[in-house]
Image (cartoon, rainbow, N blue to C red; front, side):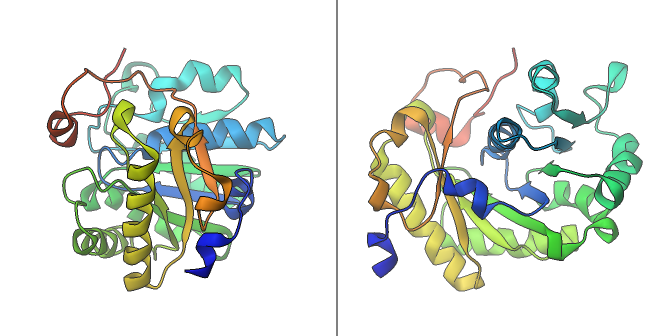
Length: 253
């Protein structure tokens, strides 16, 4: 593929995700919460006003709301249940989400529940989403259940679109095995993401890799921008690849 020989700058990811609203959705373990946090901090460092909306209602092992203090320290607004409702799976924030989508300024990043059931929370505010100023992105990790093949990934994207009542506009490739991730794993996952994108007629807007793995990826090895992740989430238990594939990716402090 000719695009594979086109150098890309890692900073280009912020240009690729320049839409005022970026919605991140995917199955549990896809890494969407980690990506939302990193993007929020990155856009904030570039001087943008940033709000992160936590609509994760699928009981994952990590939610953006767990990083509330760090976000506040960096001047990022978090829209999520607070106080005694901080761990609630309640629609109590939906009016605030709707108002932010309709009237909020700056960058809005939305972390949406990890499967079509969770995507229904997004569907409840879909009428407030203006698609010509929105990227609705599915995060893919081909080492997690339900997205182990291209066919499964295609089915998941279509199910999410139906549940969210919003078209998906692109994919993020985030195939990884936590500390066991290698550049080859990232590149293999990107190849599968591109095949998925081809079937869906969608773009792969960016690949994702942690700081250590990214150092092994040549700038000209990717056909798309690379988001380099700083690990904000505490790594899970150490275990084998099989444990990482079927067990939790994240644990709470």
